[in-house]
Length: 490
Image (tube, rainbow, N blue to C red):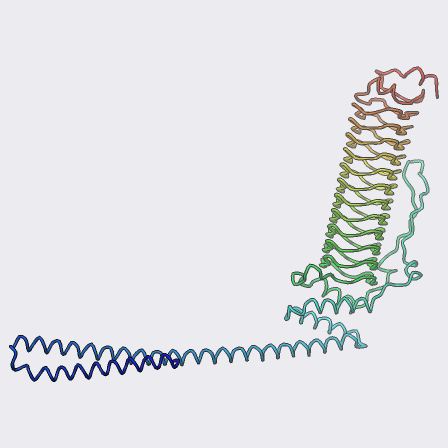
């Protein structure tokens, strides 16, 4: 109880005592005159005296009770403050103990990372993982330690060493009499040729790949630049927004891995397994992906500008809106792949397999599709201006409103394809097979049709034929007669 409250209490107590004494004096004084009063008056005065006395005693009791209650509250407040202070001291001691424990475990594990025995280094890595789990505030520090460990112990090889492991380009040897393509390619057996990854490096990558990324800030990105982690096991690893520029991941197992927004500029992923990997908006500029397995991978909006995808398998992959400018897709498998709106300007798609692929509104200006297979593909609205499509197979494809201006379709096979409203301005269709194709409203202005086969073609009009450039070798539908200038040439 404060001093002010105590003084107030005592002032009230003195006042009540004075009133009590005065009341008793009045009662005694009045009692001397009781004999002069009547019995009724005497009873009334006695009752008033008793009532006054009772009120005085009650007030005194209340004040005394309030005083002791205040004393108890003051004592409880002091005890609470003492307990709070004790708790703060306990928390501080606990924090100091925890910090000391972290420092001890940190220092012990970091010291062991430099141990000569690989078993000790591997154990230290898993100790650091446990520290990151037990103390979330140290999560990112530990991730930086582990990525630095990988960079320091697995730097990329020299150019001479790496050239020894490069996948060779295929050599096109023409066609057999049966029409089958023959190619010679040298593929590495990654499990036999590529070096095995060290166990401690693999342990560090495993810990990094299964970390709790929710503890990381937007600007915190894993730094694994220029690391040699060939044949690494990164199955289902979380490498979101990781910096892997120049990293060597040849033969790595990245099935189901999460690489959204990752930077793989110039990375080497030859022979790697990226089945069902998520590479949404990843940067694969100039990356090497020769013979990689990217079936069902999500590459939507990814940057594959200048990437080498020679012989890569992208069956049912999602490449919607991807940038494949000048990418090398020779002999790549893109069956049932989604390339809607993809940018394939000047891309090399020689002998690529694009059966039933979705290339709606895709940009293929100047692309090389020589010998490619586009059977059943959807190329509606696609831009194939100046594209090279010699000997390309485009059976029963959807080419509605596609643009083939100045494209070279020499000896291409477009049998049964839908070319409704397609623009073929100045295209070369010499020797092209258009049997059963739908040519309604197609633009044949200055189209070369020497040796082309239009037998059974649908919706061909004489006006279209007159705009084209043909000769006696051009085979028209039975209901059309070749223009006079055609019959005189060829």
